[in-house]
Length: 64
Image (tube, one colour):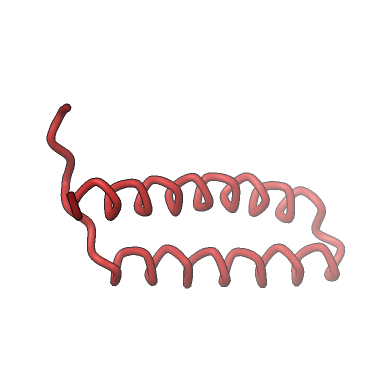
């Protein structure tokens, strides 16, 4: 199996914090009547959730 860059729990926490901020931004933009900006943040949120899955995988792989 290919080597993978090690990840630390701090990386997981950083991604989780970014996701929290994106969710707050999405909610605020939707409430303020900015649908295009809210859509853009939803897209960024999906990307950040993918990054969280990737970090979790890196942590899991680096423990073995």
